[in-house]
Amino acid sequence: MATAVPHVPPKQDLPPPGGYKKIPFARVPPKSYFTGFGMIGAYVAITAAGLGVYYLTAKKIKRDEIEMRSAQNVIFPILIAERDREFLRQLRRNRDEEAELMKNVPGWEVGTWYGEPVYKTLPEDTLVTPIFKEFYAHSDYKSYAKRANLKLWS
Image 1: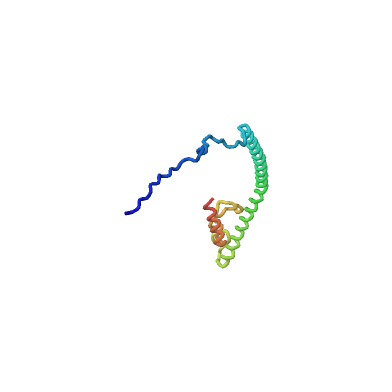
Image 2 (image 1 turned 135 degrees about the vertical axis):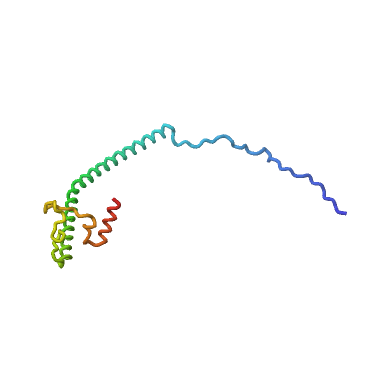
């Protein structure tokens, strides 16, 4: 027969002598860097500084806008005059191109329909603004298309 194993009593896990350490369960508040009055004071100081910077910046922006408006008001009549001069130059180019194009047609006068004025009720020195396609009739297509698309978007 088999030999019997001697009976060893089980070893129980017990606390160490003197017991376990105490479990810390008390609330540990975080370290306070600022008091309530300090935080309110910091808020007021930062807000005042921000408002001061905002005021100075707004003043500068307003001054710059006034300067830009003044510059635009000064240059606007010059730009209008340049636009009008270019308009009249293009009308002259159109007349010259018409004269060159129709020089072999008998009885053709530039600005008339075979010698008959187109606008009979207007004095001769009256400028009649041509329609859009007529204005760009003798220019390249790129200029016409650019202006036509610009006209559609405005």
